[in-house]
Image (cartoon, rainbow, N blue to C red; front, side):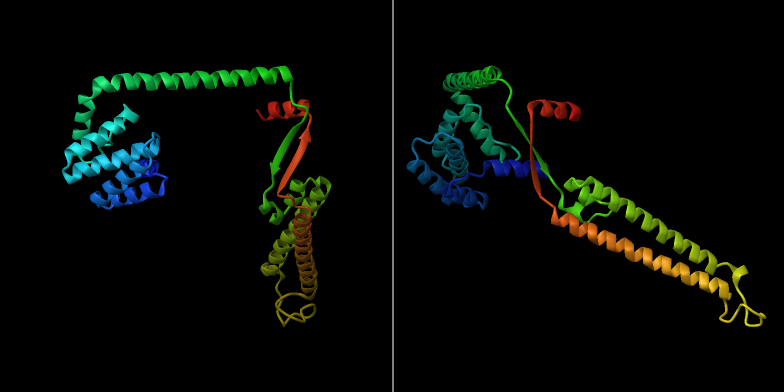
Length: 282
């Protein structure tokens, strides 16, 4: 409902500076100022017949009803209806007494409005037929001239891909071999790092591998046996080395993706290639 009211308000707001002031005064309830500004604008634009003129007559008519000057309001509403015979005030935005007066004026002048309404519909139908004829003419001309000699495919690239792992930036830039190499290296290094962490935790948390200072040999630095301590040290080397290499490969991928990044790529295709791509996308 709020979106509907907002759309109505935006569509009703005039573009002219003077009319905007009249509209603002009208919304604030300063009906005398609104009527004066709208009347002045209409005097400066006697030949106006578009949406601005309709809005000016609406502001003037409603304001005059609010001020109690019904003859002036009637004149404004008649002028409005002469521009748009099917116009109607929104009962959700305008007081019932104003809507009732407007409908009364409209009903009284219905005999004069009917020919205007028919003429307006005839003009709209004429415009529709002209548009259809124009489209048909363009279509026939295109059919005679044949298909285009070339088609330009425009591809918008995402900047976020430059920061993603697994060679996403390289795939986007069209460097598939480099992307596959980066993705494979990062996958292997991540798997090695994760495996070393799990293996390290398994050994470190295994109670059967613990020893005490009372042991005869092989327990110079409890709680781990000397052999396990050496193994854990080697695993730590693998863990930190794989992590370092992973981030090094990732950093290389990010820098390389930024170096070759182009936000917008235009590719020239032949009509046959374009037709195949469109059919595949469909």
